Structure formats: structure tokens, C-alpha cells
Image (cartoon, rainbow, N blue to C red):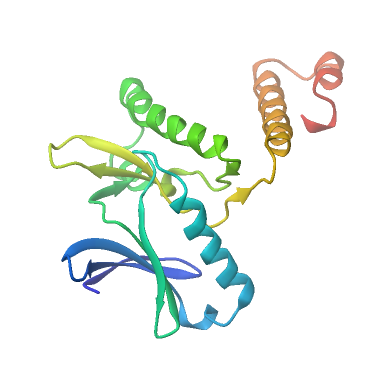
Length: 191
């Protein structure tokens, strides 16, 4: 391991070199205190399984999973750049055209995720990485599927999407006009 890139509640991500190829990777490892907790270990392993089945240019790629001396790891493609959260903190709100160029690839990635029966459940600026390509262009990448939910059937996913869409529509409508009995009747309890 070369250096710490970041740490969270359950693990840390390091820049490392994958031998014998000498390829730089981002190595996500579970903190020592959680290695024996079966619930945390299961969540960590599920994240690796979820991301490994997703192939999309805007989702971080998993290269390997395993354990060294009892410590589980996920080896992912190494990215240079910054998170969307860091970019927004440094430079403030994006111009509309830049925001659209950033979010459209993320939406395409989420469409692929949903087609596999997976809901990310933690999509936020911290989990969208603006990777700098060798050409200097920026490529958004979705990270951190640690709390992703995998549905057993497309029917369950459809019900979830319908409820989420209904709640979002009701919130948008309620922001555009004052509350009325019509809105309450249209949105019901989910609004």
C-alpha cells in the first residue's frame, strides 16, 4: 500500500500496487475491528459482488476481491480527480451545461444498475467521482455500493421505483403551489 486515500466508518481506501503487474489500484479494506462482525463482513462482501456484476464506463470497476491475513479487500480501478462534493465545495454551483454533462452519465450508470435489480441507496456528491482521463477530459464515476439493495425480482424494483417517483412528483407539486385539499388528495400519505 502506498498511501491512504480516504476512510469511512467501516473501512479505508488506499492507493496500492497490484503485483505482479505493477498496476495501481484503489484498495478498499475493512477496519480491523469489523473483520469478525458477520453483519459488516457480509455488507462488505455484498458490495464487492454488486459492483463486480456491473460493467459501465461510469461505475468504478472491481478488479479483484479477497483477503490477506484475514483482512478482506476489494481492489478497484485507481482514479485520479476529485469527488463531485469536493468540486462543489471548491468552486460552488456548476453552470447548467456542466451540471448536465456531469449528471447524464451518472443517470446512464444508474439505469444499468436498476436493470440489474439494484438500488444504490446512497447516491450523493461524495459518491460521484470526477475522474480525470489521460486526455484531460472528466468522466463521472459512481462509487460506494456499500448500502445497495439487491431485489430478487423486477416486480419488487418496479414497485420501489413507482413509490419513489410518486413521492418525488408530490414533493415537486407541493413546492410549486400552496397546499390545497386537491394536492392532499392527489398525493395521499406518501406526499
